[in-house]
Length: 338
Image (cartoon, rainbow, N blue to C red; front, side, top):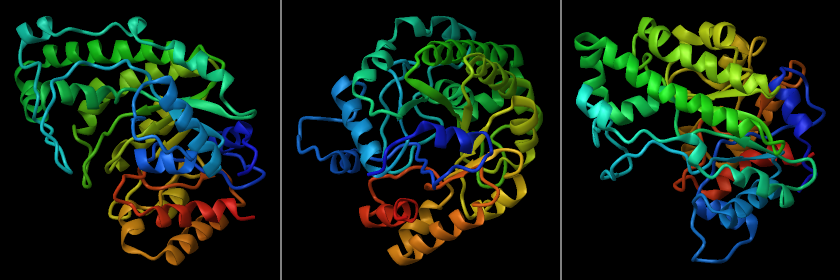
């Protein structure tokens, strides 16, 4: 367990060389958090409570991170939907026309419990910061509220309604990040918004630039107004909008990579001089390979990025419960064994 130093994470986000390997993970899973934190309490469940976030912080600290990712209770109300290992992008539709848009109970960010970010100051280890995240992102929440198929039809049938839905979601997320970044415990913010499939963006690049990207510009401007870096977590094939992510929106870092789309090694060579690259050890690779092969790839990635900087080691997405713990530990050991 090394001493956390968020300045090392900041160096990565600035595209610089940290003085030691840096780890990044968006989130882990409940049993792994508790295992890392040494918590043996069946009643403690993952959620937006002070006790859970103390466990979260301890887990990240003991694993060797310089931060912990923490969200708040702010969210866009949605009905409970049936979930298996995958979910439908069309279940639980709440907005299908102008009437349902106006009837929807739009949340007020200021009414959520952001005080948690201040309260956690007393339990944050010296040198450690919080990276704030969102309750999903702009496109993700619009799809969740309207349904993907319905949204695609709305783009043709009622573009004014589409714009109004994006504006209602985007404006609230801007306020969310404004409140988050006002706390000195928060060192950076993640805008977590899945944009793509394996082959392309979920909306055409033109529609991404019309409806989605303008709100991301405002989110990043808000985060930057507090002199904090902004990270985009987004799954899918974003090749056609990477220039927008880097040059127009001005994110400092991009997270989430899949080997089937573009291996992180190639992503680093392609964009690493323009934006920090976070994680990238593909989840499928973690599942299919031995701890030795995982450790070797992780070490090689750290070696590849050593001279250029702007890289933090982690998975391609997150650590779901089905990833064996020993494979996760093999990955992070590449950074933690000096």
